[in-house]
Image (cartoon, rainbow, N blue to C red; front, side, top):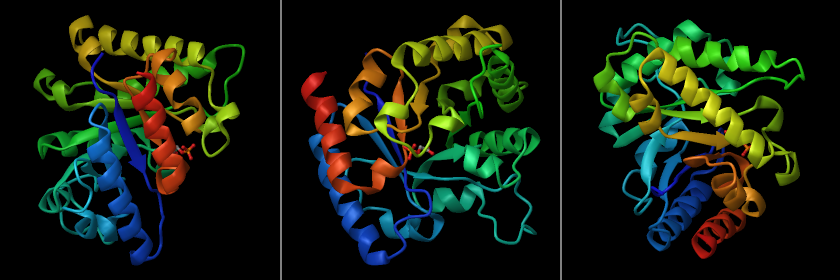
Length: 253
Ligand code: PGA
C-alpha cells in the first residue's frame, strides 16, 4: 500500500503568528519521524509564506484558490501566487467554502486552474445528510462529475479526491462514518470516475476520507475504510492529538 496522504486543514486557525510557529515546528518534527505518511500542511493564506521552509518533510498546501487568472478579483489569491510560496497542493470545494457560496461551476474552474498551474487539487465531495433512500449517492456523483468532467486525461496524475460527509465534520471519533461505509462510498466514487474516464484512471486517483479523524480512529479509517489518506481538521492544530494520530499510524501499519 502506498504511503497515505495526511492532509492537515488548519482552517482559520491558529490566529497568532507565535502559535503558527509552534505548530510548524511540531509538524516539522513529526514529518521527519513519520516517513511512512505523506503530510500536507494547509495553513491560512497569510501564514503560507511564514510556513514555507518550516514544516520539515511535509508539503505545503492551501485551502482554496481563485477561479481564474484575471487580476480583478478583490480578496482572492491566484494559483501562481500560491506556487510562488512553495504550495504544491490545494483543497478545492471544501464544504465550508461551498456553504459560503462556491458552486459546482466555480469548483470545476478552480480544479482546472490549479491543474493548469501544476498544483494538485484535493477535491472535496460529500453529502449533507445520509438518508436511507440513497439520494446522497446521486449528490456525490454529481459533485464528482461536475468537478472533473472534460479534463484532459494527462491532468489526472495530479488529482486527489477527499470524501467528507458534512454531517461527520467537527465532531468526535465516534461520529465519523463507519469504516465499512467509507469503503463502499470510496468504491462508488471510483466507479463514477471510471464511468467518466477509465478504470485505469479511477484506480490511480487517491481518494481520502475526512470528517472527525482523530488519533483514536485514524488507523481504522485507513485500513478498514481503504482510504488513500485522511483530511484532518481540528486534530491538525492540536499538537498532542496530531502526534498521537501519527504515532498510531506508525506503530500499527
Ligand atoms: P474535522 O474537519 O477533522 O475537524 O472533522 C475535517 C474537515 O473539515 O476537513
